[in-house]
Image (cartoon, rainbow, N blue to C red; front, top):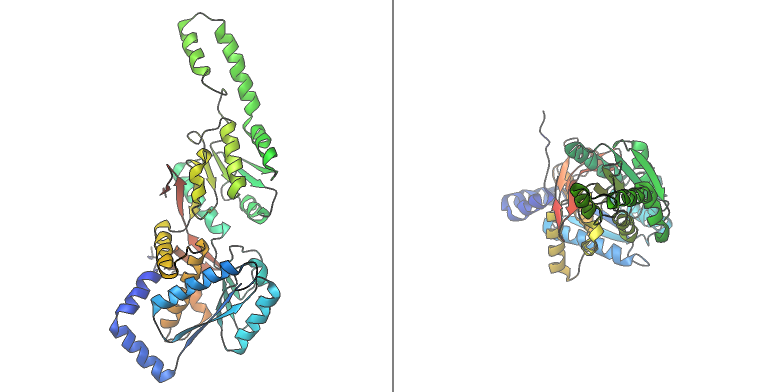
Length: 392
């Protein structure tokens, strides 16, 4: 089997910085041909999402510093987080002769970018539905997450998986997971986003009331017996809340934040333990608030390389004295990817290089770009004793 050829952005950049031979050759080539890599940066640098945009810009500046090559120039412009300003700024890029742009961040800003044929956009969105042909969705998408879960499911051999998703803004992810049918779900449910209604819905799913009545009936029978074995069984049952197991072995919840916590807490209140049923969700960017919730213990999710994310966060903090937006690591990798393609093609950037079938490896992990999206090879982590542990 042909071995997958990958590049490590971090290793490659450090090698470039420390190799005088490479720098000398690069400088000679550029002085002769006056080759300059112009990279547009399209981010919300004002308005509601300014803080997010500035964090992404600093990540790109950090990558630029690590590359340490004077022939790379970035040109930031303000998308203001909307489609019209993203389009106007992109037209300015086009007039400047820029043909590769990092950004925009938000899917909604892509609306008119398909009209600009001379530019390739590496967007940080994780949405992949109807992405313009000149745009690569570089975010951690649901397709990559489901592929990672599928491989792990095969490893641990689960067979009866429930899919739970909210009737909310995440409907696209939920519909994709259900229609893709990669995981062969045993049953699917959509729950109301009202926290007061979630518990009642989970009780129905787990047949909590039936199992509770079964326990009560069994206790009444045992209370009438004088047999030693029945008295021992009675002592055990008096410590329980329900009797009987649920008819599924795993649950995937497509949700985030407080609603995700509400769903998992409802399973715990319905006497369904994570020791008996495997609970999964989608990428949560290592949300440490999970450590404060008993219901989140043993929760599994796919995500990027956690060790590298911690290194990136530390370097970002040491440089800018602030914590980065967790997704900004993708912006760092985007510039490294562009630089790698450029420097390995006689200092000329061509879009086709982004679709190298052998794949790449950045700080966030291995990936390959196909059909206008980045397909990441994600890892599986679980919450365990206030830590995130890699399990696959």
